[in-house]
Length: 79
Image (tube, rainbow, N blue to C red; front, side, top):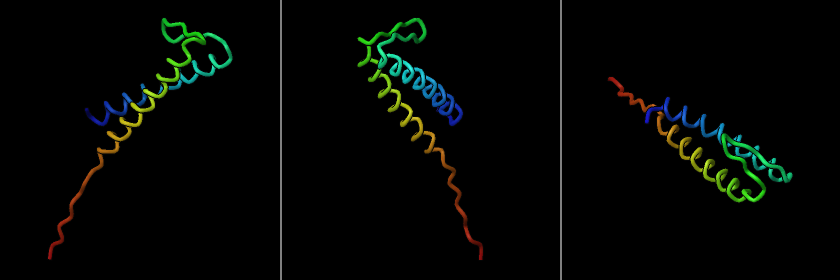
């Protein structure tokens, strides 16, 4: 996966995380929340919490992969 693709995936996962966190806030106030075509209710709170954990793990892995694209330069001294 290229650095550009990793960054695009990372941006998408961060957007997903923001939506799931908004769902968690709404459900903590005994409301329902809609993501796409799914309506979540308070009964889905554990599912929402697990989705947040999963996405945070994915973000961490993507950030680690992105960090592995460091450029290594070798200098050879000339005498």
